[in-house]
Length: 173
Image 1 (tube, rainbow, N blue to C red):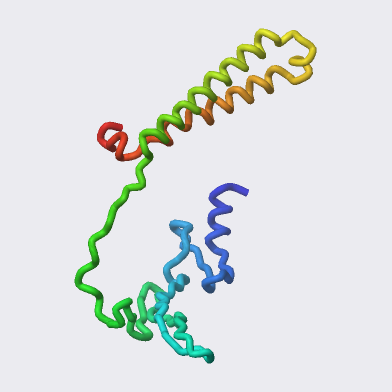
Image 2: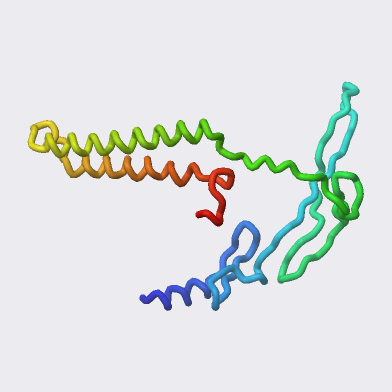
């Protein structure tokens, strides 16, 4: 049973999935476009008056388009938020916050990174110095070194995780 044979058998298989019959392309191994089914669903706001006189809002779900066998089929017109069926010509300006990490938060994160790093180094050195004591032998020094190494890896991962485009540009990296 080779990898090529397994790939061939896999691509000859079809099964019923959530979106219908799934057929795999024998060349690429990805789902064949003939077996895909996508729906464009429009949620349209509908105001109504409740029994107590309160104006309520509900959203009616309408399937407007279906994609099947490499073709889009239009069932009904899509209604935009303005209530119109034509695509808006302009969109409101975006407010790009960027969600950047503040300098103080970055400094605190780096502080904890370096504290964790140096504590792990310190505990590894302590383990090596006390490797012949009964308690450390019972705790298996190799396992303790492995824990220290894992803590070091996790600690230093905080450094690249703190970089964003406000701190360093893509060109600089």
